[in-house]
Image (cartoon, rainbow, N blue to C red; front, side):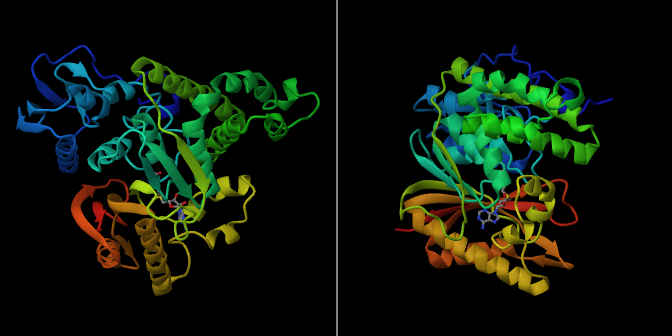
Length: 418
Ligand SMILES: C[S@@+](CC[C@H](N)C(=O)[O-])C[C@H]1O[C@@H](n2cnc3c(N)ncnc32)[C@H](O)[C@@H]1O
């Protein structure tokens, strides 16, 4: 029987031994879909590589390339460059789950609608972002863009209206700076979990968390509590057991992250995560080098109901918070109209803050609502074009698990005119 993800405690088992000796670029084993092959080729083109596809599409011959070291450091879809493992191949070994794309801190909290991290790494390369550039994700969600930008040395501003998303994204990118302090507080926190045994003063876990002076350490333990609450709600696992188990895996994942930074000598990007509204960004005009984001898919997922237990636990009033969310207000046609207005304002803001000629990647799909397909993709393309973006690529991407609501999404790459 398959074990549950958080019960597994080993690195993702790729075979690192079979080094390819010839002059080829070898695709990673998990690359299976046409859109991934398309993105793999776009990555190579953006990095100035001249190539030829060989061996049943899984190997690429390097005809001409400026800098092989750069390829090895940056590429997302390849395992080897001329027999040498890529950084990404080594990064994904650091995985405490049984899902190939939930390596390092990506797995922390079961957020619905996460980006595929490998795709984000590729898109950051495709739109030409370099170390020290700044990417914005105005719907940062679970923080996928932030982690991938951080790994590539690209600075990232991540914004979300949901305090749960802000917390997740911060914990995934900031805990590496406070690992010793996280370890120091572990005993104190664990004491509060089983009150009858150790906690003679009757202090709760919240009392203990509130004593922690560092904000990053505090956030880590807040998140650990929410992961356990979610585990308890979704799987019926007893809270204290869920807390202890997940806490161990969270600490191991952060330790893996610290290790891989040293092993690969990574220079991390600076990450700034904040609560905000995509429709009114507090950022200067033409201050951002690229955007990679996925807005709510019209009415496909109600993010407020979905995360209700966690938002309540964080002390938020769901009715008030709903007012600011894109895609969850109104009923019937009114809901679609409100969504479209919100998306227009969000697109105008993306246009305003982006530097001329730079790229915005928007991943979005058409959802089925009340028996009809809502043409969000076409709407976004039309409006973006109207305000000054050119659509330079539109790649179909299959999705799983939401068949009754949507079957595919589109990766739209826009360039700002001017
Ligand atoms: C499709 S999810 C993004 C998922 C993300 N790409 C990831 O990898 O986890 C859309 C996000 O938009 C956020 N959101 C909704 N309305 C917003 C608003 N007005 N401003 C900023 N974020 C908003 C939701 O909280 C949700 O996290």
